[in-house]
Length: 148
Image (cartoon, rainbow, N blue to C red):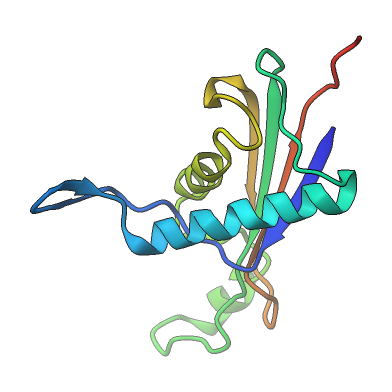
């Protein structure tokens, strides 16, 4: 089974914060995880008519592709020669790809699979930047169906 969804943001999971009553997850991370889960459930319902999840003993593969638009203008301190060569390269700035992946995997834990130990393969890419593009994360979750 394959479920493909996208969200219109690329955001990494933030570190837990320490408050007066212990640790807590920042509100931005909670909101984004909720949006990710809603996108997964919506894509699953559109394709299969229900929310699907991998059986407990089946290995799962997750593929994540991130795109972030390039800045519209060149900073004055950046040489034009380097600026022109830089476009088309993967973006090497925050958020880190592992934090983006962690936010998606934590959002889908216990929904797309029973336990995150089931995720056997992960593929993650930061695509080259383009001017005028849109920020988005495309995710594909897939596993083999059980033989009956």
